[in-house]
Image 1 (tube, rainbow, N blue to C red):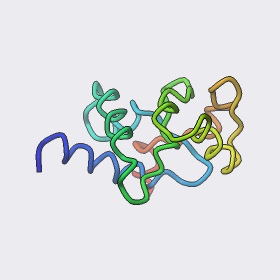
Image 2 (cartoon, rainbow, N blue to C red; image 1 turned 45 degrees about the vertical axis):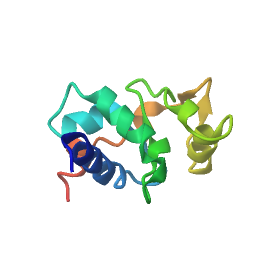
Image 3 (spheres, one colour; image 1 turned 180 degrees about the vertical axis):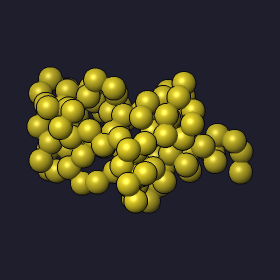
Length: 112
């Protein structure tokens, strides 16, 4: 397994824990994994995750709540539709009340 593959697997393990109806950011996942400057790498992992089992990539957005990865989903608005099906309102490609839906792995995974 290459370094990038093992990093990707670590990303997937974190993203699989994002609860239904919540979102996290690329940077928050990178920070949790001890790779604070690797938000873009987390994005690459999400782009490559579509063949992975049970990786809710739609729950990972940018630090402002923008659906920056939406063009990597099939269909025009699939990422938005998936989020809305979980009760998350999206307007103009941005999550409404982002802070209320935000799930920070550095906080939430330490509670366990």
